Each structure stands twice: as C-alpha cells, then as structure tokens.
Length: 472
Image 1 (cartoon, rainbow, N blue to C red):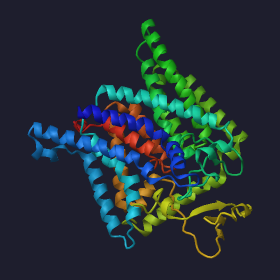
Image 2: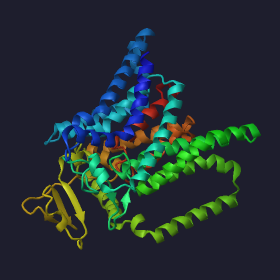
Image 3: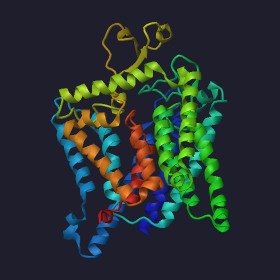
Image 4: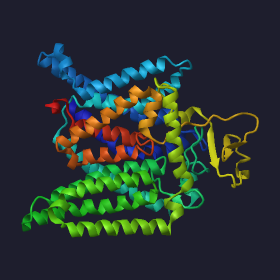
C-alpha cells in the first residue's frame, strides 16, 4: 500500500514539475494580482510532495528492517555512494557554520539546490520500485516532453500581451527576485526570442528536454537491435513511430532554446545511444561520411547565423566566470558556505544588467531596481555600489566555491562513481544513464541542476537504477 502511494506521488511530481514555473506564475496573478513575485506558498509545493515521498520511503525502509530483524545492522546497508553523500552533507554544514557572515536564508537556498537531490537519492535507492512505475514514468515523460515542446513552439507565434495577461513580467532576459518571471529571453544584439515554454528560462527548458531525448533515442535504438525478422521489424515500427514523432518535436524545441550547453548534451546522448546500432550496421566509410556531413552542417550554420550561435559576449562570460570561480576556490580553499555561489545568490543580490560599452542604457532609467553596467563601469544607480549575483556558469565550480577543494573533489567523485555504476550495470545504454550523462555535461557550462524539474526527476530516476544492492 505504502509503495503504491509513493509511486503515484512520484509519478505526479515528475509529470507536474515541468509546468511549475507557468503554473505558479498564473496562480500568483490570480491570487495576489499582477506584478507580484511568485508566492512562496505556491512555489514550495514540489518540496512538500518530495518530502512526503521521502517520509513514506523512510517508513517503508525501517518497517522492512524491523520485519527481518536487521535494524541493528543498518550500517551494512551503506555503500560508497551513500558514504560520499553523507560526507558532502556533513561538510556542507561544517563549512557553512564557520562562515563569519552566516545567513540562514542563504544556507536554506543552498540546501535546496545542492543537498535535497542528494538526500532524495540516499533515501529512495533503499526502497523497491515496481516495473509498472518505471514503464509509466518513462512513457509519461515522453508525452510531457511533446506537450511542453508544442507549447514552446507555438509561443513564438503569440503576442507579448498574451504572456503579460498570464502574469509574466514586461521585462525580458532578466531575473528580478521580487518581480514575476520574464516572459522570454532574447539573444543579445537581436530581437530573436529563445523558447522557454512552461519553464523559467530557455536554458532550463533545454536541459530538461535532455530527459525525454535520452528516453526516446535509447528506446528506438534498443528496439532496432531486437532482430531483423519481419515480426521483429513490425514491432519496431509500431513502437518507434510515436517515440520518433515526440522526439522530432522535442528536438525542434531544443533547437529553438538556443541553449548551446543543452545542444552539446543532446549531441552526446544521441551519439552514445546510436553507437551500438552504428557498430552493428554501418561501415567505416559510411560513418566517416556521416561525420563529414555533420561537420559541414555545423560549419554552415555558424557561418550563416553567427550572432545566434556564437554570441561573443555570452561566450566570454562562460570563460571569465569559471576563471573567477577558480580564483575564489584558491582564495577560500575551505569553501565559502552553501548559497555563496550559483542560483542561490540571485535571491539576495541586486539585479545586474551587463551592457556593452557602446550600448545605450537610457531604457533602464525608470527601473530603479536595476543595476546597469557598461562594460565594467556601473552607471546606475550612482549613489551606491551594487552587489551582483556570483554565477560561475559551472555547477562543479559552484560546489567548489561553496564547499572548498575537498567538497569539489568529493562531488566529482560522486558523479564519476554514479556514471561508472550506471554503465557497468547496463544502464548506460538506457534512458537513465544517458540523461545523467547529458545533464552532467551541460553542468560544465551552466548551473544545470538548479531547476527542480531536472534535479528531482533525474535523481529520483537514478535511484531506480542504483538500488543499494547494486554494489554487488
């Protein structure tokens, strides 16, 4: 009974998480009126549901131990993954407690982004998940991916007034802590919108789309390897048409996000998923030809759309900010505490607009809540210095800044160990392993795990593939 309730709640969470940002935006306007920041009571529903799931899992686990009279041997149920997670959690509290300017709110945000997914993995890999849940969850993710993608594509045709009517901000490309979400982001130096669909931004959407992409491409590939008999081919065709249709919609939406980190993650996922099929059916000459064609297409796209694809100012930020993060790690080798870097700093810092020296900042004069910079020079406001969010643009360096060199090494060890376990168990050629690979690669360039739809979904699915007994 408890298992079925837990699985239904987990399925509900996975299905609703992609609609969180849109739903909270609309409900906040209906309840509090236009121009209000997302209501906290609405925003934390996902943590509440996850908390209930974890509580049920703990009751199941302890009950099972009592039934088999092995409560005293609970320590034997820990493996290296559990130990690494426990050390990271303990280190987080220790480092944060020794900070001279300890902030409870900042620490709580750090726990939300950094620790809750790890705690979920620690608990959920100790309970049984039925085959029904695994199959239903994967099918549901594919359908949700299709719905989110269609809405995202259609959003390019809708007027800005529609999004303001829903409750979004009239600003674009900016996150303001005490204001509604921006309706869209634009590529710098152009008026081209980036699709964000039901998410809070295009990067969040792009990285979440890696989940249905991993499920779809691995499903099609593995089915294609079942056999070459007429009956087998008929089954492959029947089961693959829907996956391919949804995959096409998802890939179109992914492209329109213009999230280069998500593009790279998707490319790696597709290559790894197709590898067994290519190895079985493609000659070396055809493979080299395919690589040449792909390279030519990429070169042509960059040559035709340099502004959209290269984005020099954004690329410079992806170089400068990680270097700055490395400098912080050298300056604070023991760490600066949870919430001192990454998305948590968006909540406590000023909203900073970084413009090029030749840009005109006059449009922001009536926005007293914005800090405007022309290059490195602050031009608004003039009476105080602004404190901008510290975003390393790299999840692993963010952990390094918060937890120091030791925390950085421990976290990388945890990621590497999970990847190895998934691959050795055969999960590397199935959806869970590849979605984890894709998001982990995107985390090299963005704060990929910040969105709950990505973090909670993927880490819960990892728990399915890495039960504690898998160490044997």
